[in-house]
Image (tube, rainbow, N blue to C red; front, top):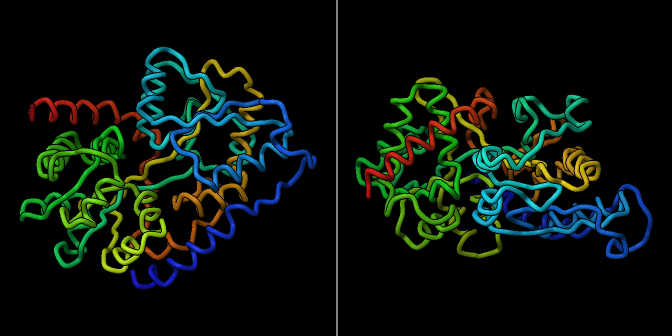
Amino acid sequence: MQRLIGTLLFIGLLGLFSCGNDNPPAGGNAPAQDFPVGLNLLTWRYLAQDAALIKGFELRYRTKVNVIVKPMRDIIEEASRGALNADVVLLPTLEDAVRLRNFNVLQPFFVDAFTNGNVDDRYLDNEGYYAGLTRWTMVSVYNPNAVTSEEAGSYAGIVKATRRGIRLGVAHPDSSGLAGVVAGLNANLNSKAAAIWAQSVYEKSVGGPNGSDTDQLNRMLSGQLDMAFVSLGTAVRWFLNGDPQHFKAAETWRVRFPHTQATDINFFNITCVAMPANAPNRNMAVALINYLFAKDVQQKLTNAWFEYPAESFTEANDYLYGFPDQIGLKVNAETIEQNIPAAWALINQIAEEQE
């Protein structure tokens, strides 16, 4: 962790200086706002670095991208009504991609980056309805004065820690990767182990699953929690957001990528890209998706989001190499997807029993 802190300030400054300096690889000199709108991009989040990448795409293809930013709940609600008004949609979790697919609002797609083998099959849907743009995992952010590294480093250890009074914070399943972990346990161990873990986390977390991952880190900062189970990217961006208190917390707290004790497996999740079924400009949508998997773009995504790239030849942001654990690769996205319905059923049953 000390090496992590040593690189914190450097990486933060690097991000500040780099986010506005993207040189587009090709295209004319006309301002992007002068191009006709050729694509609608729907996303739950739009960082300054994301805007720089989209500008590069606009200049290369001489088109204007209309970016629509909505909370994920609103995107799900729109999908439940039968359609998404966009050509491309970005989603924070694999669970969200499964939700949209269940609403029949997505269509399969395939881009050159997949043909060339630059994106491993483990990050792709077998039927082509989604692709993992970046990969991440749910991590234990913990106070080492209260929680041991061994407890934070395993899924079972997290539960054992709560049984001795450790205060755990977990986001609501709709705003985190909790269901993905339950799905992984269901696939890699068995349904009984998944049910016990899900019930323990649900019942033992302080206040039950609630709010967002950011809310859990803020609760931890205020002294309400000893450990937060949150997404990797959210945790690192929270540490690096420029708040001196967050930087100080990064010096004090520790981060582990939990693994199963029996099989030593960590379950990854993915930030997904998908194509709505009613996309009016499929060709331009394919061009944007392919662009997002280019090595230079993937490098900027890992630096902006602090998630691991999906492109095979892109190096992850240096900060991610400072953690003591490796992100899991053995259980692929397709397997997690197939077990998410079972995970939802377990979580919903537990929630009903708590009412």
